[in-house]
Length: 242
Image (tube, rainbow, N blue to C red; front, side):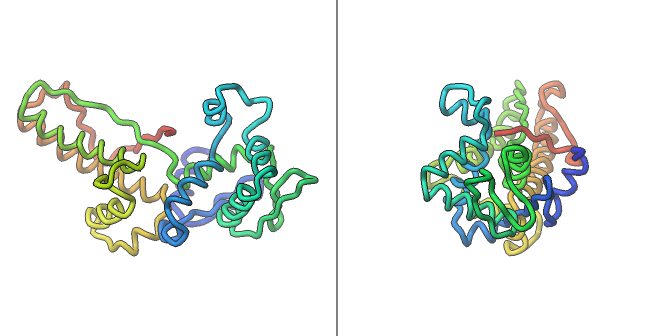
């Protein structure tokens, strides 16, 4: 699928099909019912690709592949199998069973196998916010401008701590839902209908708008143009894998 087509599909609640396998968004409201900690742990496990697993094991697993590695774990651990069946059923809106004979997950008219799993994983990662945002740092030599930009850096640090499960004072997903609702003039119920791709997209758009205003203020306080990257908020959001 072309990148521009995929980006537009990710903005909607409709399923994205990979080899006949429907991949639906999981709303923040649904995550709240299941539990964010469980959701975050399980989805990250199911989204481990060859590179992730290789880094964890300290060896190349290209001869095994992520599908066979994850399925191998599930076959030998009942709880892991139940977890994968639960989330695959949730993601596809279909009753999923595992076929040991075919070594595949079977749904309503489709199969998830080693041949389509990597592509399915990539969509699951996107829909569930397992992407970061590229950032560039400014370093103005003007002290007043530096103080203005310091606030921005402190907020970045808070968001990073929230993602990594930092201290109790760090921002949680609930905090971020509240922030986005306030910043966009929406109700929290409306924000809770977003999946994490949609949420991150809108949150980062709001951040770009705020950054634009902060950088304008930095320039007004004497920062040099070459030290501040002034990007208008009507611009493309850049993504990179975490």
